[in-house]
Amino acid sequence: MHRGPLIPVVSLAAGITLSKIAELPWWFGAIPIVPAIALHAYILKASIDPVAAFKWGKWHILWVILLFIGIGIIDESLSRPNSLEQSHGGVVPPTVYCEVTGVLTKTYGERIDVKIEGTNGAKARIRTGIKEVSPGDIIRIPTNRLKDVASDTTEIGRKIMPMMKASGILYSGSIQPKYIEVVGKSNSPRYFFAEIRERIETNIERSHLSKSTSDFLNAILMGDKTGLNEKTRLTFVNGGMAHMLALSGLHIGILAGFLLFLMWPLKLIGHYKWGYMVALLLLWLYVAVTGMSYSSVRACIMTTFAFIGIMAERKNFAGSSLFSACLLILIIDPGALFDAGFQLSVVCVGSLIAFASHLNPIGHRNHPKLYVLCGFLITTMIATGASWVLTSYYFSQVPLMFLPANFILLPLLPIYLSFAVVFVVALCLGFEIGWIANILDLGYVGLLKSVEWLSCGTEFVVDYQIPLWGVIFWMLLLSFGAYIINRKNLKIVRN
Image (cartoon, rainbow, N blue to C red; front, side, top):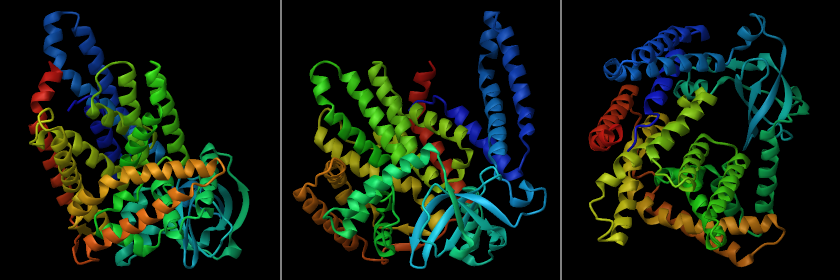
């Protein structure tokens, strides 16, 4: 494991957290940045003397920590959404313009997420019966129908309020369609890609696939879970397979491998680097079309670093790729630090990098097939063992059947996804491959029944929410374990 930008990303996260909790102004970031710059300048000046350079070398880490703490404070404070009162000088206007960022179809109509203009990114979650809105629409809504999410005193409201506020959702409300006026359409590139995704999803839905299979493909390929019914979601959650439905690093890794397989003709003629470049371009296009979720962006950044390392014929460190990805994401969007999906993604991948290779008792050279099989089992145990506290904290559930379900069913996902990609690409080109559609239908039915059988409903699901101090303790314990098991590698890197 390689330390790389670990110190900067941890310091940046500390500054973001400090600013978030204390609601610090942006200029407060200068307090650690000024001494960081002064210390760096002093060390550079003192380093003219070799003896002094050796003496002050260990203090480089201090100015790096102070610098990124300050950057984190500035980044979070400038990105912090304002309330309607703050944005309009204490006088809330009767109506506001909003940009629709998400639509979820429910039995009562639509639940829409909107970004309120003039508030530095404040969002609202609205229940409505309107059927004519889509992501990218600009709408006007009355403010007297919105209420602060903190005002919800119900048990479920108190539980989800911190997550909503962390993602920038400050308001919620119920607005009838007659009070919502669609006034325009956003010209953001984000919604250009959203339109492409919608067309692809429409092609999938109009194919000869069953309704349940097309909804499943839209979830695992396009990142759109709105078509999945509650029963299907609960089945995967109870079986410890919810990550299969989320567009994550697992899916990006499978797709990256599939794209490289398609690039084999370039390798045959000696231009393998072009294959990696084309695969990267297609991978980033895919991430853009599917909505740029934190987990997919993180995975794509890591893949980019890995491919660049291969093309440059240099050794790639997975730890450095992960930390660099986190650093870029947090600088662009500091609110990602408090997103459950981002936290789960980073904890799972980080734990795999730190522990997986050390805990496999089988030698790779002596028993390569057994090594892969054992590695898969250990990977499943590490990912779930590392992330169970976050699952418990955010979702108040701990599935106990995660190990057999993942061990039996997860190896089939790359095969299923490969068939799904070929089928969808063919649909977009104007023709449908019937025999693949049959395989996808049968595969989904078999997968769902297997998860149902392995999970036994809610019989093996523990309803428990771990307290915040328990989450912190577990994360510290993981970090300490990662350091202990990798300390020899860290010493080698430093030397």
